Each structure stands twice: as C-alpha cells, then as structure tokens.
Length: 115
Image: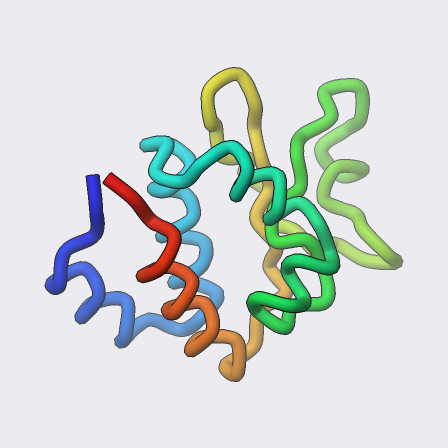
C-alpha cells in the first residue's frame, strides 16, 4: 500500500502533529516501512537529522512500565498516550512537533513509504 496523491493533498492541509500522528499510525498498523526504518525512528540522532525533532519519533512500549512511564521522556510527556500496534510490538509517537518540521516530515514520508 502506498499513499495516493489525494492522501498527500489532505496531508498538506493538516497541522504537523495531526499529520504525524495520523500517517505514522497508518504506516505502523499496515507495516508500510521497514523494520530498519522503525529502528531508526527510535533513535534521537536519526530523528534530529531527518526531522530536526529533539526526541525519538517512536518509543517502543515497555510492558513492564506504566503508560505514564512509557510516554515520559527527558523531563516531560513527549509521546501521544495511545500506542500503535506493529506486529508484536506497540509504539508511541512523539507529540513534540512544530510547524517547521512539516516539510521534512512530508519529504521523509514520500521517500520512505513503500508498497
């Protein structure tokens, strides 16, 4: 599955937080990116380099921790509270987005989402 031109037209109208949460949820649930890319999105350095985001875009759920402990990172709640399932794992998506991240996010989306 790949996003259509119509999907991207809708994405352009969304605020970055809505865009990231909505599209990454679909991407993870439908397994639209590689395991390597999922691993990369859990790294702060990669997220900074690709999106200029200061936190890992994805945080793998640790079932030994409470929900609050899972979304807490570096002094605050940095992740949306609802985990997204991908295979056997669940991931939290960072909520730490600003308007200036949108262009980089759309570039990544068009480059990384595969059939």
